[in-house]
Image 1 (cartoon, rainbow, N blue to C red):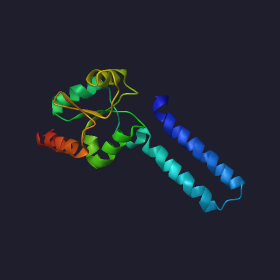
Image 2: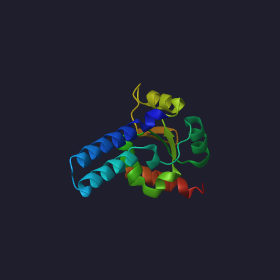
Image 3: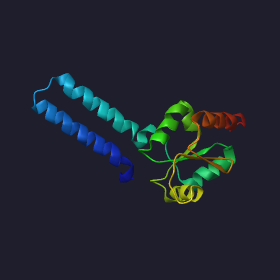
Image 4: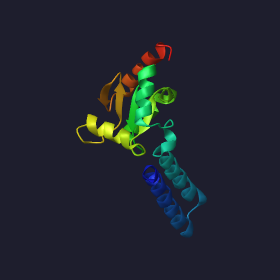
Length: 150
C-alpha cells in the first residue's frame, strides 16, 4: 500500500521543501503558494485518489463475467493509466479497476498477459486483453457493456 503513495508523498515533501526555501529567501506569498499548489495537484493526480476504488483481480474477473464490463489493471504513477482515467471521465466508475501494486494476483495476471512485464493499463474485455488501448475504444466498450442491462 505504501508503494502506491510513494510518488505523491515525495512530490509533497519536495514541493514543501522548495516552498520553505522560497519563504526563507523572502519571496512573495504568491511565489510560494502557487508552486506549492501545483505540486499538490500533481501529487493528487498521481495518487490512488484519482481512480475508482480498486478491487482484487479474482473479484474483478468474477464481476466482469457477470456484467460484461471491462477490467482495467493499473498502478499509481502510470502516466498512461492517468490518461485513460481522465479520458474516461465519469464512465471510469463502470469499469472494474485492479491496482496491481495492491493486488499480487492482479500483477500476476498482467505479467502473464505481457510476457513477464507489468505493462499497464491492461484492459481485459470478454476475456481478451488489450495493452494500453485507446481511451475512446474503452469508452465504447463501457457503453456496450451498459446496454446489456448490467
